[in-house]
Length: 156
Image (cartoon, rainbow, N blue to C red):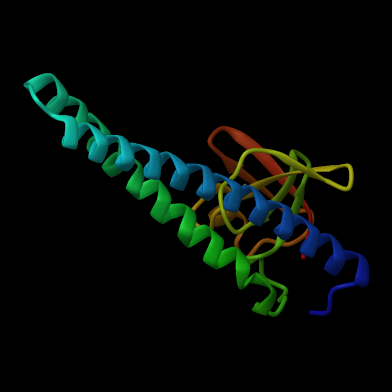
C-alpha cells in the first residue's frame, strides 16, 4: 500500500506531536523524580528524629510509585521514534491513522486528545479495545466497543 503525500505528511505530523507530548511528560516525571531523590538525600543527612525518617520514606515511595510510569513513557517514546520504519499495509497496524465516525486515532501510544493542523486525534495502543476490534476490518465496517459503535471511514 502506498500513502499519498498528504497522508504521509499528516501521519508524520501526528506522530511528531504525540512524541513531543510523551517526551514532555517524561521530562516532567524525571524532574519530579530528581526533586524527590534530592529531598530524600537532604532530609536523610539532616535526620535527627522519626519524623524526618518518615519524610525520607515518603520521598522514596513517590519515586518508586512513579517508576512504572517513567518506564511506560520510555517505551512509548522508543516505539513512536521508530514508527516511520513500518511499511503501510492494507491491514490496520501500529502507526496507522484511523478515521471513524467518532473521531480520528493514531495507533501507537495511548494519549489524551490533541490537535494537528486543525484536526483532533487521540492516541491508542495496540492493546486498546478499539484497535483490537478494528483489526482486519475495511472501510465502511462497524464495530462495537464498550457499548459504542464505531464505523471505519479510512485508515492509513
